[in-house]
Amino acid sequence: MTSIVDNLKDAFKYPLYDIKKIGILAILYFIPAGLSLISDYIILDIVKQSVISSSFFKMTILGDLSLKQQATLIPHINLIFLGIIAIISILLGILTYGYLYKIIESTMNGENNLPKINSYKKMIKKGVKITIIGIIYSLIISVLLIINIKIINISAHSNLGVLGLISSTIFAILSIFIIAIELISIINMIKKEGKLSNAFKFSEIFELISKLGKIRTFGAIIISSFASLIILISGIILLIIILILLTYCGINQQFIQLLIGSIIVALLISYCSISISRFYGLVYKDL
Image 1 (tube, rainbow, N blue to C red):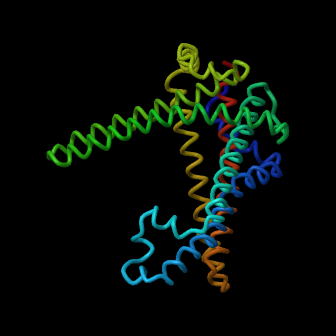
Image 2 (cartoon, rainbow, N blue to C red):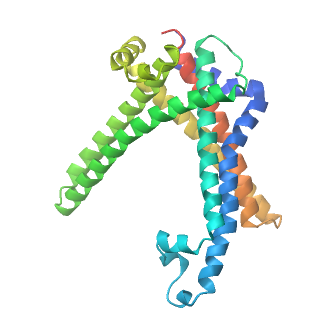
Image 3 (cartoon, rainbow, N blue to C red):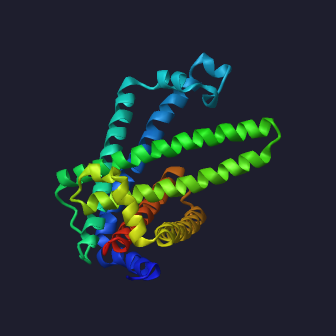
C-alpha cells in the first residue's frame, strides 16, 4: 500500500498536468464571487443612496437597519437579480462537486489524467448526491455546535470554565470523526456505482475504516487539511503582496482589488480541491 506522503505528493502534482482544467474549475468558483461583487456595488450603492436621501438617515445609518428594513429599500428588480445570483451559485457549486466526484472516480479506476469537463447532466446528478450527503452531515455538526455553545454559555455564567473547555474538546473530536465518516461515505457511494443509499450503509463505511486503519484514516484527513491550509495561507500572502503593489502603482480602487483577490482565491481553491479529490481517490483506490 502506497504511503500517505507519496499519495499527497502525487495529488499536488496531479492538477499541474492539465492547467487548463484548473482554470476552468476556477471560473466555476469565481462566477458566484464575481456576481456577488457586482451585486454589492450595484445594490448596496442603491440602498445607501436611498438611506442618505431619506429623512430616516438623520436618525440612523445603514448599519443600524434591520435586514427587513434594508430589503424594503432595494428595488424589486434587484431582488430578482439577487435570486438569480443565488440560483446560479447553487448550480455552479453542484457542478463543481460533480467534477470532483469524477476525479475521485477516475482515480479509483486507475486513471492518471484529469477527467474531461463534459456530460453536464451527469455531473449535476453526481454533484447533487455529494450536496445531499454534505447537508445531512453538516446538520449533525450544526446540532452539536449549538449544544456546545449552550454548554459554554452555561459554564461561563456558573464559573465552570473547565466544563466549556471539555465540551469544546469533545465537539472538535466529534466533528473530525463526522467529517471522516462523511468523506468515507462519499467514497463508499462512488465505489458502489454511485448509489446514494450506499453513503449511509455504516457497516460498509466502518469496514472501509477498518481496512485502511483508524490512524491512517484520520491521519489522511489531518495531513491533507494541513497541506491545503499551507497552500491557502501562501496564496493569501501572495495576494497581500499583489494588493500592496497595486496600491503602490496607484491602482487602489476597492472593486479592482477585490476582483483580483477573488480570481486568485478561485485559482487556489480550484487547485486544492482537485488535489484533495485525487488524494482521497488514491488513498481508497486499492480497498
